[in-house]
Image 1 (cartoon, helix red, strand yellow):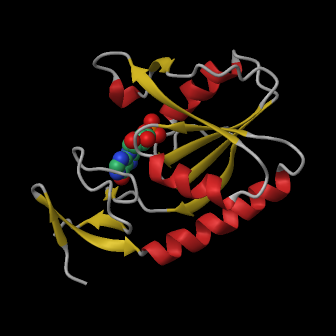
Image 2 (cartoon, rainbow, N blue to C red):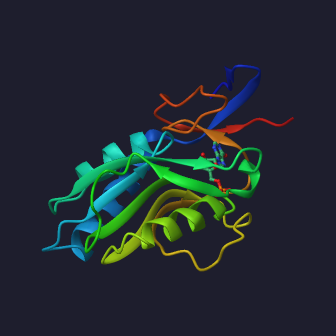
Length: 180
Ligand code: IMP
């Protein structure tokens, strides 16, 4: 397949939509099984996880709720993943079974901070469901990543909600940066 040009960089398909969809259904079935009889509260991290979250909640048979949040970093320290606050969470999550829906866990620093902030709101449980994990970049090894669709190499990717400079989120497949 021909590479595509997004802004100033070329990307090629590394994971077709059919493979993503099949795996999301599998993970959804696993969540349905694990949370049977409960009503989990999905908390999806904007913006990158919005497409994954939409597919995931529809693949889970048990009733659920969904909320969308943003995380704000301290200025100038976004590379450290330091999260200042969780924006947009109006729902009371005390006593709830929370499943954080994320597009990609890279270093894991963002997720570590987010889990810490949500724990202070006294949920019954917290699990992470990440579409992608880059295991070689992971710096935090005790994250509750109960569900993950795919482990991927360190390359930069876009599509299926993930962006390069705001572009590429609408693409149904996942693409990897062409480096040569
Ligand atoms: P972490 O704190 O290093 O785990 O950063 C995770 C965040 O970095 C994700 O939610 C994405 O927004 C972004 N990110 C990491 N790797 C990629 C990538 O390959 N493509 C697009 N965004 C990425």
